[in-house]
Amino acid sequence: MRGSVQQSLVDYGGVAKPATLPFIFRAAYDDRLGDSTKRARWTPASVLVRAKQVLREEGLKSLWFKVLGETVYRRQLLIERVLQGSDTDDDGTKGHISLLGTADLPRYAAFRPESDIEELRGRLDRGESCFVMEIGGEIAHACWIAKKYTRIDYLECEVELPPDACYGYDAYTHPAFRGRGIAGARVRRMETELMRMGYRRTLAVVGPENRRAIYFNTTAGNEVVGRIGYYQFGPWRHYFCNVDAGKESAALLDPRRA
Image (cartoon, rainbow, N blue to C red; front, side, top):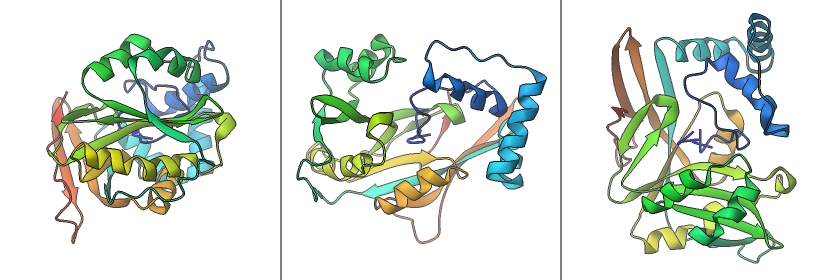
């Protein structure tokens, strides 16, 4: 999800979930995490099982909003980080940061075997950047940065970005390197390069029910500044982007149906 974000910025473990799949089916898609060749089979029983799982693990509120998300209403939290050029804890213990180049695409594909190299090449050709963290010569973590405009797949919209803002998405840490604070180190270490590119802030979106992503963003120094989403009734759809009170300096985006 662009836009995921881990949902960018929501981290789905590197498996792209088609936005057209009902939410219950998307979770079954997670079964592919351990085996990229595994194909999920959708049955009424699996739908019921998934609904019970969401109810048990995330609660009635989460289940309700997931149902709404497949019918009339979707929303994501808008995350902002004001860049300050921080490069603290850059002692190499959490990896070395660099920008992905075209020649590195085969290495990235080995890092995320489900990737489509041509699609990745298209991202680079559009001027997007990918910050990677390497440990022992292996890519341990990566995050893509979109510029000028981006598509948020979950909301099925395109957004023109303010000149001083870029958009982070598709952040992923290889399972073998999780729990080491590598993603947080990447957030801090990429600031200087983004400022050199002329950006003052980064934007991202996360699902309101994704507690892990929200916790990561807030502890990393990012801030929830609003909500972006849409209401839909039949073929009619209205997009919105609401900035929280006191956050008027944040980007007021104008999402458009893709």
